[in-house]
Length: 109
Image 1 (tube, rainbow, N blue to C red):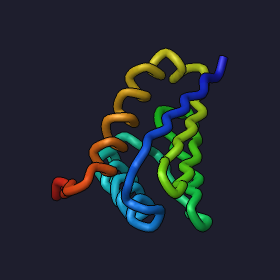
Image 2: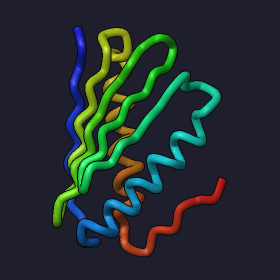
Image 3: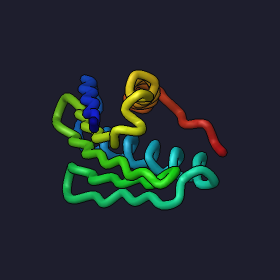
């Protein structure tokens, strides 16, 4: 059975800066895992990103909503990846928290 993950995090950056940081984090992750992912895309429409990742023959999708004081990430995992949902949620939460911290500087590749 498919599994959904929802992560909501508060921020004090304003929507433009939060969006910039989240977009930067998505690009860093795509580059870091390029050898493990068959296909990935991130399409931004205003303050919403629609993500699609294909790995190991499985497709996961996600939506990122950047709001005035929160960022909400909704991930839909296929059944085969559902057993990893706890680990995936922890990685998403930690990465988003780091990106949204005041004074955060991303690590360069």
